[in-house]
Length: 98
Image (tube, rainbow, N blue to C red; front, top):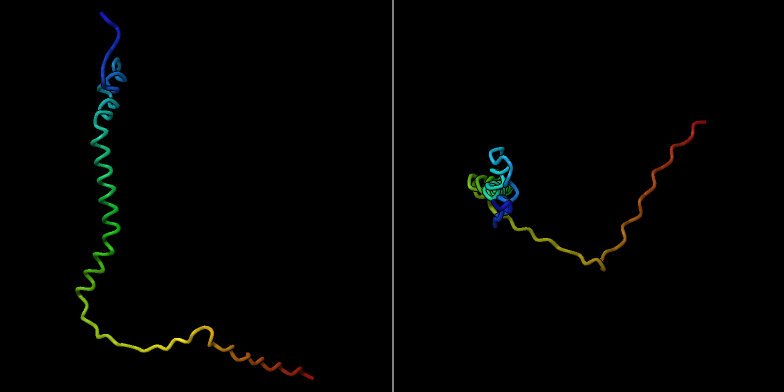
């Protein structure tokens, strides 16, 4: 009998003379399913975390009554035309008791 073990699968070579029913062998074979499940779950949780504030805003905006718009004119003075502020008046010092 030939003692060499030939296989194209790395897991088969790794677990050739070991107990395959222990658990690590099964985890190796199902790692792609576990990986896809964990990535999908993570994306779902992140989607819910980032999407919930948006959904909340959409629900709140649909419940609100429409508000009237008010236009306000604002005059903006360029920085070069600004003047120095007036000097601050110093407070009077209290008189010393005699």
